[in-house]
Image (cartoon, rainbow, N blue to C red; front, side, top):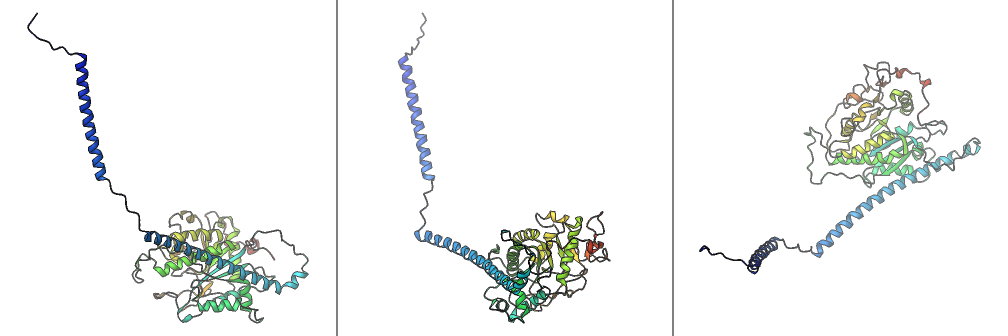
Length: 433
């Protein structure tokens, strides 16, 4: 046996060493966890103090004020609609009284008491109006010229087929509007006052309910009217766009067609006889049935649209209030160069050869208005109106023998402008009397 010595490990000594190592690991783990917890406690942000009671109360008041403001706008809109209904009922009562004897003797009339569907007018004409400096009155002349074009004879095909909506964009501040409205709506009409009698039948006076708001921040600076190359609209122009949206959205459901007018334009003689003829031509040929609009004058005036297209244009105007004035939003929309308007590029824009609405106003509703070239008067050519794009002007060189352009809606279309009027369909959406 050698002199080397060996250490003998018993099971008890091995277990003891394991316990020592385990306890050491446990202490280290506890220490590390304690350090982590301490760091987390020190780094954690204290809970924010609850807002003072007065701030909570102020927030609740602001929310209540917003709700009350919206309710007030809704009530104004409802009042405007009720006023329109009231005027319409008064006009219908007046008409019924005037023709009671004819109705009583007309044995072939069929009653439609069970038919509750609304009867749409053939044409709605929208006229926004605002006060001018020194309360200059253009509105009366505008309505006089317009009403002279509308019939008082119940056997006329246009009788009771047109609705004229005059919207007051300055409620409570427009003395001329109040004067004209009172002449039409107050008391029995003078039998010699044909203006008041016709207006009671055709015209509806409404105050702008103000439900279309300008989304522009209040602190945005005003553009320079004489140095504005991108045509950024100022607050007054943006308000004009909002007012126009208000008017067309109110008028859109009541008629098949809509005509834009302004409160300082005269309707040229025989215009209301020409419009059914022009629409009959546009609707006569298959290649023209998707026409987008008809130009009979200039500016945001003298544009005729179908009701469904008017709805699309109003929705588009809402997206461009801060970008362009309304008379520039229009060409962007119809030309198909605006956002989501490309489909309009495939639809023709028609123009009548002659101007049918003449500007009579010398006092602008805007404080600043640059000098401008002369506009055409009644029945002057629409081929060289300086303010219109080429697509909206009458194409006299391409259509020398036509009264509407474009005179060929497609390469293989017939020369539809030469279709004899006798072969055209009856007036679109205008039932015979």
